[in-house]
Length: 238
Image (cartoon, rainbow, N blue to C red; front, side, top):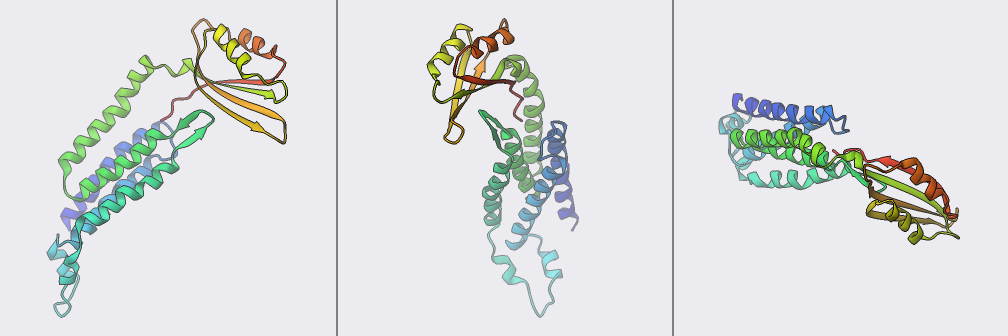
Protein backbone atom coordinates (compact mmCIF):
# COMPACT_ATOMS: atom_id res chain seq x y z
CA UNK A 1 0.00 0.00 0.00
CA UNK A 2 2.82 2.40 0.88
CA UNK A 3 4.66 1.69 -2.40
CA UNK A 4 1.55 2.43 -4.44
CA UNK A 5 0.94 5.69 -2.56
CA UNK A 6 4.53 6.83 -3.17
CA UNK A 7 4.24 6.09 -6.89
CA UNK A 8 0.99 8.03 -7.24
CA UNK A 9 2.39 10.96 -5.25
CA UNK A 10 5.50 10.95 -7.44
CA UNK A 11 3.28 11.15 -10.51
CA UNK A 12 1.34 13.98 -8.87
CA UNK A 13 4.57 15.93 -8.22
CA UNK A 14 5.72 15.49 -11.83
CA UNK A 15 2.31 16.47 -13.18
CA UNK A 16 2.22 19.51 -10.90
CA UNK A 17 5.55 20.84 -12.20
CA UNK A 18 4.68 20.24 -15.85
CA UNK A 19 1.18 21.64 -15.43
CA UNK A 20 2.48 24.71 -13.62
CA UNK A 21 4.57 25.65 -16.65
CA UNK A 22 1.54 25.28 -18.95
CA UNK A 23 -0.60 27.27 -16.51
CA UNK A 24 1.84 30.18 -16.59
CA UNK A 25 1.28 30.33 -20.36
CA UNK A 26 -2.49 30.20 -19.79
CA UNK A 27 -2.99 27.13 -21.95
CA UNK A 28 -6.35 25.26 -21.91
CA UNK A 29 -4.55 22.09 -20.80
CA UNK A 30 -3.13 23.61 -17.64
CA UNK A 31 -2.30 22.56 -14.10
CA UNK A 32 -5.30 20.36 -13.29
CA UNK A 33 -5.38 18.66 -16.67
CA UNK A 34 -1.71 17.66 -16.68
CA UNK A 35 -1.86 16.45 -13.06
CA UNK A 36 -4.87 14.25 -13.83
CA UNK A 37 -3.17 12.81 -16.93
CA UNK A 38 0.02 12.03 -15.03
CA UNK A 39 -1.73 10.50 -12.00
CA UNK A 40 -4.20 8.58 -14.17
CA UNK A 41 -1.41 7.08 -16.27
CA UNK A 42 0.40 6.10 -13.09
CA UNK A 43 -2.70 4.34 -11.76
CA UNK A 44 -3.19 2.44 -15.03
CA UNK A 45 0.45 1.30 -14.91
CA UNK A 46 -0.01 0.12 -11.32
CA UNK A 47 -3.16 -1.79 -12.26
CA UNK A 48 -1.25 -3.37 -15.18
CA UNK A 49 1.48 -4.53 -12.82
CA UNK A 50 -1.06 -5.87 -10.34
CA UNK A 51 -2.70 -7.90 -13.11
CA UNK A 52 0.71 -9.34 -13.96
CA UNK A 53 1.34 -10.43 -10.38
CA UNK A 54 2.99 -7.43 -8.74
CA UNK A 55 1.95 -6.54 -5.17
CA UNK A 56 0.77 -10.12 -4.43
CA UNK A 57 0.26 -9.48 -0.73
CA UNK A 58 -2.18 -6.70 -1.50
CA UNK A 59 -4.09 -8.67 -4.13
CA UNK A 60 -4.42 -11.77 -1.97
CA UNK A 61 -5.71 -9.62 0.87
CA UNK A 62 -8.60 -8.57 -1.32
CA UNK A 63 -9.77 -12.16 -1.81
CA UNK A 64 -10.75 -14.89 0.61
CA UNK A 65 -8.75 -18.10 0.72
CA UNK A 66 -11.68 -19.99 -0.75
CA UNK A 67 -11.52 -17.71 -3.78
CA UNK A 68 -7.82 -17.22 -4.55
CA UNK A 69 -6.67 -14.50 -6.90
CA UNK A 70 -4.49 -16.74 -9.08
CA UNK A 71 -6.55 -15.83 -12.11
CA UNK A 72 -5.59 -12.21 -11.51
CA UNK A 73 -1.97 -12.99 -12.43
CA UNK A 74 -2.62 -13.73 -16.11
CA UNK A 75 -2.40 -10.14 -17.36
CA UNK A 76 0.29 -8.56 -19.52
CA UNK A 77 1.70 -5.38 -17.89
CA UNK A 78 2.39 -3.84 -21.29
CA UNK A 79 -1.13 -3.98 -22.70
CA UNK A 80 -2.76 -1.17 -20.72
CA UNK A 81 0.40 0.95 -20.98
CA UNK A 82 0.36 0.60 -24.77
CA UNK A 83 -3.27 1.71 -24.88
CA UNK A 84 -2.42 4.76 -22.77
CA UNK A 85 0.35 5.77 -25.19
CA UNK A 86 -1.94 5.54 -28.22
CA UNK A 87 -5.09 6.83 -26.50
CA UNK A 88 -3.48 9.96 -25.09
CA UNK A 89 -2.98 11.10 -28.68
CA UNK A 90 -6.70 11.87 -28.96
CA UNK A 91 -6.50 14.19 -25.96
CA UNK A 92 -3.37 15.83 -27.35
CA UNK A 93 -5.01 16.37 -30.74
CA UNK A 94 -7.80 18.28 -29.05
CA UNK A 95 -5.27 20.83 -27.77
CA UNK A 96 -4.05 21.66 -31.29
CA UNK A 97 -5.84 24.61 -32.88
CA UNK A 98 -5.40 26.00 -36.38
CA UNK A 99 -6.11 29.70 -36.88
CA UNK A 100 -5.54 30.64 -40.51
CA UNK A 101 -1.89 29.82 -41.13
CA UNK A 102 -1.06 29.65 -37.44
CA UNK A 103 -1.04 26.34 -35.62
CA UNK A 104 -1.23 26.59 -31.83
CA UNK A 105 -1.11 24.03 -29.08
CA UNK A 106 1.60 21.70 -30.43
CA UNK A 107 3.77 22.21 -27.35
CA UNK A 108 0.78 21.63 -25.06
CA UNK A 109 -0.10 18.44 -26.96
CA UNK A 110 3.48 17.22 -26.60
CA UNK A 111 3.39 18.06 -22.89
CA UNK A 112 0.20 16.00 -22.48
CA UNK A 113 1.88 13.03 -24.17
CA UNK A 114 5.01 13.47 -22.03
CA UNK A 115 2.94 13.69 -18.83
CA UNK A 116 1.36 10.33 -19.65
CA UNK A 117 4.81 8.81 -20.24
CA UNK A 118 6.15 10.16 -16.94
CA UNK A 119 3.03 8.92 -15.16
CA UNK A 120 3.53 5.42 -16.56
CA UNK A 121 7.17 5.48 -15.44
CA UNK A 122 6.21 6.55 -11.91
CA UNK A 123 3.52 3.87 -11.81
CA UNK A 124 6.14 1.29 -12.73
CA UNK A 125 8.38 2.52 -9.90
CA UNK A 126 11.03 3.85 -12.30
CA UNK A 127 11.56 7.18 -10.57
CA UNK A 128 15.02 7.98 -11.93
CA UNK A 129 14.12 7.99 -15.67
CA UNK A 130 10.84 9.72 -14.84
CA UNK A 131 12.41 12.67 -13.07
CA UNK A 132 15.39 12.92 -15.42
CA UNK A 133 12.83 13.23 -18.23
CA UNK A 134 10.89 15.75 -16.16
CA UNK A 135 14.04 17.85 -15.64
CA UNK A 136 14.86 17.77 -19.35
CA UNK A 137 11.26 18.68 -20.25
CA UNK A 138 11.16 21.65 -17.86
CA UNK A 139 14.54 22.82 -19.14
CA UNK A 140 13.23 22.61 -22.71
CA UNK A 141 9.99 24.45 -21.94
CA UNK A 142 11.57 27.23 -19.86
CA UNK A 143 15.15 27.71 -21.09
CA UNK A 144 14.55 27.04 -24.77
CA UNK A 145 11.76 29.63 -24.77
CA UNK A 146 14.30 32.31 -23.85
CA UNK A 147 16.58 31.16 -26.67
CA UNK A 148 13.68 31.19 -29.16
CA UNK A 149 12.77 34.75 -28.20
CA UNK A 150 16.28 35.93 -29.08
CA UNK A 151 16.97 33.82 -32.18
CA UNK A 152 13.43 33.63 -33.64
CA UNK A 153 11.56 36.74 -32.46
CA UNK A 154 7.85 36.19 -33.03
CA UNK A 155 7.11 39.89 -33.59
CA UNK A 156 8.81 39.80 -37.03
CA UNK A 157 6.55 37.01 -38.28
CA UNK A 158 3.07 38.23 -39.17
CA UNK A 159 -0.09 36.98 -40.80
CA UNK A 160 -1.44 39.16 -43.59
CA UNK A 161 -5.08 38.60 -44.53
CA UNK A 162 -6.20 40.19 -47.81
CA UNK A 163 -9.86 40.01 -48.84
CA UNK A 164 -10.41 40.63 -52.55
CA UNK A 165 -13.26 40.68 -55.02
CA UNK A 166 -13.23 37.57 -57.20
CA UNK A 167 -13.71 39.48 -60.45
CA UNK A 168 -10.61 41.70 -60.18
CA UNK A 169 -8.48 39.32 -58.11
CA UNK A 170 -4.87 38.95 -59.25
CA UNK A 171 -2.56 37.12 -56.84
CA UNK A 172 0.57 38.00 -58.79
CA UNK A 173 -0.04 41.74 -58.38
CA UNK A 174 -0.32 41.37 -54.61
CA UNK A 175 2.83 39.25 -54.49
CA UNK A 176 4.70 41.92 -56.48
CA UNK A 177 3.74 44.55 -53.87
CA UNK A 178 5.06 42.26 -51.12
CA UNK A 179 8.28 41.72 -53.02
CA UNK A 180 8.77 45.44 -53.61
CA UNK A 181 8.54 46.01 -49.86
CA UNK A 182 11.14 43.26 -49.24
CA UNK A 183 8.60 41.08 -47.47
CA UNK A 184 9.35 37.36 -47.46
CA UNK A 185 6.32 35.09 -47.90
CA UNK A 186 6.61 31.80 -45.99
CA UNK A 187 3.22 30.35 -46.87
CA UNK A 188 -0.02 31.17 -48.71
CA UNK A 189 -3.50 29.91 -47.86
CA UNK A 190 -6.41 30.92 -50.09
CA UNK A 191 -10.17 30.36 -49.88
CA UNK A 192 -12.90 31.34 -52.38
CA UNK A 193 -16.53 31.97 -51.48
CA UNK A 194 -19.18 31.39 -54.15
CA UNK A 195 -21.92 33.10 -52.17
CA UNK A 196 -20.10 36.36 -51.43
CA UNK A 197 -17.92 36.40 -54.52
CA UNK A 198 -14.84 37.14 -52.45
CA UNK A 199 -11.38 35.63 -52.20
CA UNK A 200 -9.63 35.51 -48.82
CA UNK A 201 -5.85 35.07 -48.93
CA UNK A 202 -3.66 34.47 -45.86
CA UNK A 203 0.04 35.23 -46.21
CA UNK A 204 2.50 34.19 -43.53
CA UNK A 205 5.13 36.88 -43.94
CA UNK A 206 8.49 37.87 -42.51
CA UNK A 207 8.66 41.67 -42.38
CA UNK A 208 11.87 43.76 -42.34
CA UNK A 209 12.61 46.06 -39.41
CA UNK A 210 12.28 49.17 -41.61
CA UNK A 211 8.79 48.35 -42.93
CA UNK A 212 6.27 51.19 -42.68
CA UNK A 213 3.11 49.19 -42.07
CA UNK A 214 0.74 52.09 -42.73
CA UNK A 215 2.38 52.95 -46.05
CA UNK A 216 2.44 49.28 -47.04
CA UNK A 217 -1.28 48.87 -46.33
CA UNK A 218 -2.00 52.02 -48.31
CA UNK A 219 -0.11 50.60 -51.27
CA UNK A 220 -2.13 47.39 -51.10
CA UNK A 221 -5.41 49.31 -50.91
CA UNK A 222 -4.63 50.97 -54.25
CA UNK A 223 -5.12 47.59 -55.89
CA UNK A 224 -8.70 47.60 -57.33
CA UNK A 225 -9.39 44.04 -56.16
CA UNK A 226 -8.47 44.60 -52.49
CA UNK A 227 -11.48 45.11 -50.21
CA UNK A 228 -9.99 44.63 -46.74
CA UNK A 229 -6.56 44.14 -45.15
CA UNK A 230 -5.67 42.67 -41.75
CA UNK A 231 -2.16 42.26 -40.33
CA UNK A 232 -1.57 40.42 -37.04
CA UNK A 233 1.64 39.55 -35.24
CA UNK A 234 1.93 35.83 -34.66
CA UNK A 235 1.59 34.84 -31.01
CA UNK A 236 3.95 32.24 -29.73
CA UNK A 237 2.29 28.88 -30.27
CA UNK A 238 2.89 26.91 -27.04
